[in-house]
Length: 300
Image 1 (cartoon, helix red, strand yellow):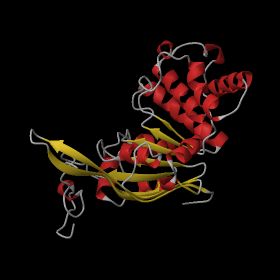
Image 2 (spheres, one colour):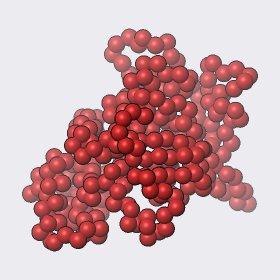
Image 3 (cartoon, helix red, strand yellow):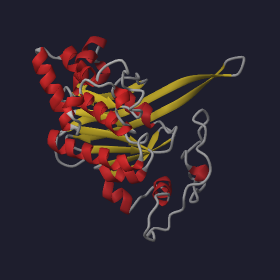
């Protein structure tokens, strides 16, 4: 995993959902996360990539116990998160935060930016009003916003500015770990690069560890130290970012890389993945990818 302290250690996480179908309410079990293990080192970014519906967001929210896992172990800052009581978890949340995909829906439209960013400071810390205001202004400036706009409401900002507000809110309590759940997918392409550069700069300054969730391998390559490729609830391949892109091993990873637009002729002979992702209610036996894999053999 490289040098540095391990901030996040996840072992054999499982999360299932019970689904009801039809007028008779027939139940089926969907295994959204299937025995996933991963580690994230201080000051690094773990990129989690895969098609929609593969379980990325479920895994990310399970790591923060926004969704309760069925089984497995989650250690953050050497604290067994899976064993904490509700009160213990509430107190520990200052160490871990999340930036959601939708900067429009994740901000309270009735609160000013100052109140949004400072809310956690007022809840978790014993600062005076002046200290809270000063810290809030500093946070806004840190993410590239004018502190003089703190009295404005979310609807007065662009999508990129709103996501900067969300990032400032997430960093208010100086967390060691932040989940970035597709934080740029709802933004214009012209803004996406600015947000990625901001996240990189903040990581260099603060030493925070990221879990960066995305479906776009090109974006993940730009920001990630290590990458895990997820398919139907399982991580099918994991490696250091450069090695994974230069020499992918799993056919699914190769197919994803083949789908990245490139103005230069590709050095790889990988084929773009064909067909639709199977239903998680009835995943294929053996390797889940074999129905779509050009290299599938009976052993798969």
